[in-house]
Image (cartoon, rainbow, N blue to C red; front, side, top):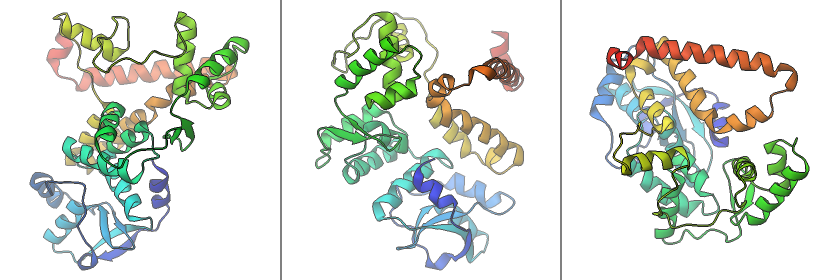
Length: 328
């Protein structure tokens, strides 16, 4: 959840006249989706509140809901008002349409990344990627080819709102020294002291353990990765060797697509399932930090609960999955 979304959720839900709203400026280049609209028209119960930019009364999130309400014969709809700038409203619109509802097409997300890279040049590639639902590498490519997106040479603002240097070589070296001198420091403590991200601190720790250089050598993006690299590297190596790898899934994108399914979104059990899946998706990047900060006195209990919950999910997967997967 972004800070703007947190502020938005504190706004009251009010009744809005549909005739006063504007549907211009949507990040969906191809307009609405007829199948999704028909599903919303047929769905029972009240539609979720829309989001409207107060200064312009432009709809930030909820165009399909407005059209569905009109088809039902309504003249008003519930919603919340957002008071930010036009650029902030666009960022919020993209984030809301990527994180839930009918997901944006890839072309829409790339176009949105272009606009955000221009309007927020100080944002890091990862922060733009988190909003638009594309990879940081794709954002970096977009930033390089779009004119007027030159960011400050020394630093950018990350996903957590902190300013970090683009060249973190000094921070990596400091983190390595801190870890060597104080092995009991958590990744969060090291990251804060060295002014790097917790993810970078984790990479430094892994490099210390493996005896490799703390500052990685930059390689061309098409360089063939080593066989002992990350999961994505291993995936590519399996493809090159002729073996059939398991597909590499973007969990956030998959969950976003599920959220656009009326059979899940408009039933109590479906919404409960989506909440559980969303929780795992949003916190996946924080596992390392969470692990480092589990108090020792309750570590055994937490570990036991995690094993039990993993067993529940495994049983869930077996019961809902296709029979042929179980048989194989």
